[in-house]
Length: 403
Figure 1 (cartoon, helix red, strand yellow):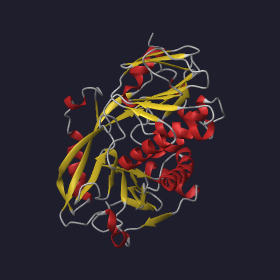
Figure 2: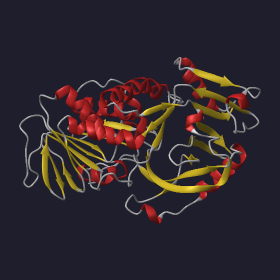
Figure 3: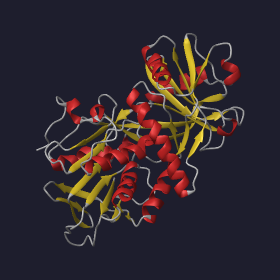
Figure 4: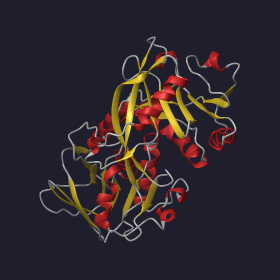
């Protein structure tokens, strides 16, 4: 959870800012990016500081770890459209910071060839003219060694996909934030958010007041939104992040241009994904896109390993060059919505409170565009993209008052 205070003075006593004041309560990568976008738009109006509840860097949320997949391969057009600009914004950040954040590897998509999920991804990529390569059983092993394509499965490669260096990206965004005049303060807890024409945010260090607030608090979103009288249909789950040892070192290495992959179906489950060996020498990351419900403050008490059992069978079946027993198991948290689409909206009763939540395990790559959209919402501008898939009105029967 992080708080970004725009145009702040000492937090030792309540402070109201005469110029535009925007405050972000967050645990996510897109909060600093929203600030950076805001600064570029409104640098004559704003000053910045950022407050985190944990000592940085921390591993308690959803944005830590060295790598994430970046891709245009989605079933829905709106994500593919947004990713077009996301690639440009990540490249812009690379140029401005002089840091490499993205490595193109391609994304291998496999799944039952006639299944709805596989066909929807294929159709979306083709319709949007995304560069892809369709593989068949005859040439699959030539292009993708050390992987078994199941009988009846199709395969294609989203060519521009690859690896985002997540930890490096977060550090880069934080450095750019400071370079633009921002001050980062960690180890400060947010304890209250009080709505009004001027929103009051109380932390363990003091009180802040702002004309607008952005809440992107990840697994803690509902805890903070409860102070505003709103609860979203969010479920927090713990994901086991598993790394599998190569039998022959280098077989699945990023330097050998081994691709990221998405397996749309395996046995009775959906969406197993992986990244080439990179973070740990000789270990490939393969995870199941699902987990067990947990309390974000007591995540270590959740010890369900049923997803690891699924992954062991998948590795043994599809990746003969890996030892089918995880060598390293880490964890992260997903905050899920019922439809696994994001929530990007204004509070229904307090229009000066904007929130982003429920990124459902696939939000990191969208960080720059989410930051841009949150900035547009808080400035009262027409969003750059149609936000109807992300508005809370789609949950009218599931969204409730916390009062």
